[in-house]
Image 1 (cartoon, one colour):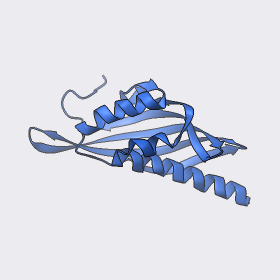
Image 2: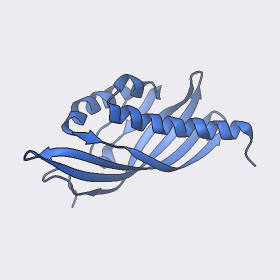
Image 3: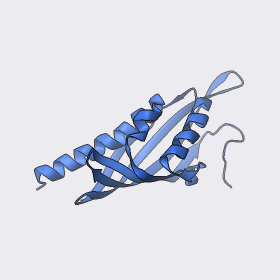
Image 4: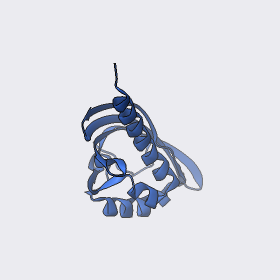
Length: 148
């Protein structure tokens, strides 16, 4: 049986993972920055992006997200392992995105897992490390990040 603290921790971690998706899709960079620890590392390399601190990650997102007419970062089936003030998690993300190709909407799909390390701070749980583990890319526009 889970204790009230364990239930609270898991709900707070689920809210944190969902808040990341909402901030990203809303392109609310200030809200996104608040979700991380000061020394967090974000690694998007498997999905074709950079690895860096939160400021450089937000700079990358602010430059690249306008290429998309629309995005939805749908997260589900999170598994968390809480150990005191630290936790690890793995969450599926299904990410349909829309870009304009020759004046027509083109929808493509990214499937990935967020592998996270979380830390409890004075302000609540925060992401200390986020790694995007690639599962698949489907229907990419011509010339967009294909791997052999």
